[in-house]
Amino acid sequence: TPWLSAYHPSRALVDNANRVLPEYVAEGSARVTNRLYTPNRIEYAFEADRAGRMMIGMGFDEGWRATDGRALSDQNGLITFDFEPGPQQVILVYRTPWFCTGLVITLLMSLFTIVLWRRWRVTPVSEADSNSG
Image (cartoon, rainbow, N blue to C red; front, side):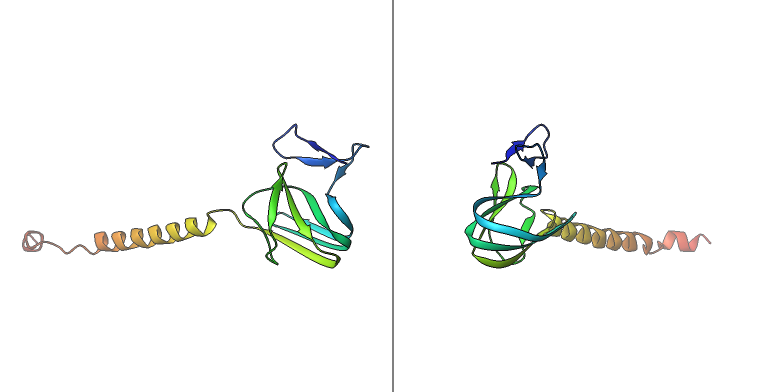
């Protein structure tokens, strides 16, 4: 059973030989056949002999989602998910929480600024200014 390295906010799965593990099958039986880590995407391909639960050595955050809709949970600060028997591919993608809300607010405020700028720029010249010339 691996232990959790908790010396820093980012945690890792570490086995008895002090090797960092990318994943750990906490329940059931599965053999990982392929894995790919990128900053906003994690892909796993594995063959499960029986249903269980896998823990991934990546910090849990509400921004992680499984593309197949499976539930992700937080176990000791790491991502975990359940799996069924058979060959599987699990793809997790990360989107910063509140990204869409922030984008909408930014776009609305940009539009508001453009409207104000155009109104300020197109202010009509008063009669007093036009008669003085």
